[in-house]
Length: 285
Image (cartoon, rainbow, N blue to C red; front, side, top):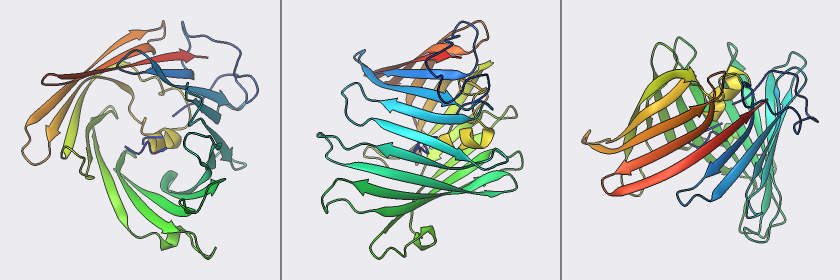
């Protein structure tokens, strides 16, 4: 998923504010996500994500840190007077490796209390003419239980005259399709964008403990980030779209705190002799 930040694009609560993110680590019993660290197959740290909150518990900011010092990003979230998330701004500073920076604004449209569209305006900074400012958008559909069941990604319209908008973005590059069980856990996922090795869909089984994002952020925000499930995946299965043949099995092992929120997840992707391990570590307020 294009994490949806995008999908996949999740967090909230407690007495944390936008200027106190360094205080109050409560990982032994906490439930509001503070930090996520991702480690690659070789055991090296790939990325650290820090979450900061407003005094009302809504997400204020995420800082995404690349250990190499390149590709760092900051996302700031903005709300109306009723506390509804209306947009967020993602900033990637210029760096000498990628040789570009950008500001990306996501403007949200609601219907019946759910986010149905994210209009994305990416403006590049300190670059040559190789990169064009552009508009993209994501359109979201829901089932009767307000679970997001389809994300359609529209790409893209180059900003050339200054009069362009998301209304001009009509090309659908790919769509994501999701199905859920009665608990609200995603049990099937498919992206119709064919990959290098073919197209696959995924089915999932779950444990009964708390998803690391389930007590953090608004539900609509978690939906946009792809963290709408309530519990944790225990096993995943990757199938060929055309033949339904099982291609890979994905196992998940967890360590939990006293409130049954994961403090560590070990994910192992196994496709024949190919094996890849990814580890996530979580701390909480």
